[in-house]
Structures are given as C-alpha cells and as structure tokens.
Image (cartoon, rainbow, N blue to C red; front, side, top):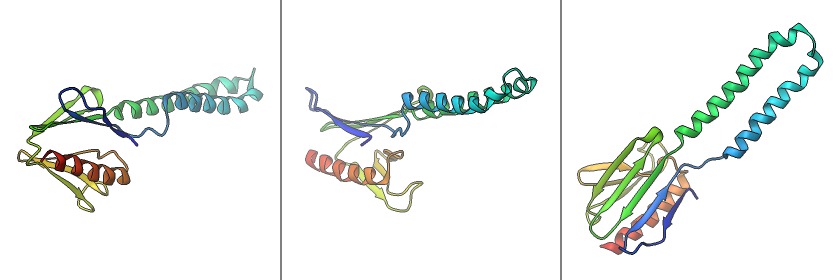
Length: 162
C-alpha cells in the first residue's frame, strides 16, 4: 500500500505519508534499458563491417536515449510525497511535489470534513479534506481501493480526536 501511518511521536502527533506507486523500480529500469539495447544490437551483428551499420547506429542510439530520458522524466514527475500531521489542535497537509514544489494546508481537525467523491472528481473515489474555507485533495495518485481504505481510516482517526 503506498501510504503508511508512522509510529506516534512523543508529542502525540499522528503522521501519514503517501506516495505514488512505482510499478517499475530504478533497478528494473536499468534492466529494461539494457535488455532493449541488447535486443536492438542483436540484429546489427550481421552488419558489422558494413557502412549500413554506421547509418543505422545514430538512430538506434537516439531511440535508446529517448527511452531512458522518458523513463527518467517519469521518475522525476513521480517524486511526490504527501505528509499529513494530525494533532488535537491542528491538521497539516504538506505536499512535496516534483522539482521541489511545496504546498501546505492547515486547519482545525474539529472542523475538517473528509469527503469521498464517488464520481464528481478527476479520478474515481476522489478523496478531499475540507476545512479552513478550502478543499484540498489527498492521495489523488493512489488507486481507488486505497483511497476508500484511507477514507475509512482517516474518518476513524478524526472521530477519535473529537
């Protein structure tokens, strides 16, 4: 599950970390690019010593470099961490986005509402928090079943504070 409640700290703060699921780890990316390069190079063995090899080689290298660049860009765009800190007096959501962008939202947990929009959001089972005259999304990158489970868990924790 791409979210976890951290063990309680000494000041009774409950912390939740959420991150996008990565189906291809970095090590898998290296294997994929290496395998792709090997499979592209295999038919070129018959062209060794031929001028045709030098005509094809720049395009094949560009294809491998393009795959590497696209996967690396996908990793950088997926470097998202949402940190929810819950205390008796304040709930704070901090979103660390790609390329160092940080967004913060704070509200009183007694007035915060957890909303699970079944169909009215950009994704199915869209989870939001409403409070302090703002509505913020929570875990839009999570799969729908994880958002539903998080909705239930977060409602229980907020109810325990009230």
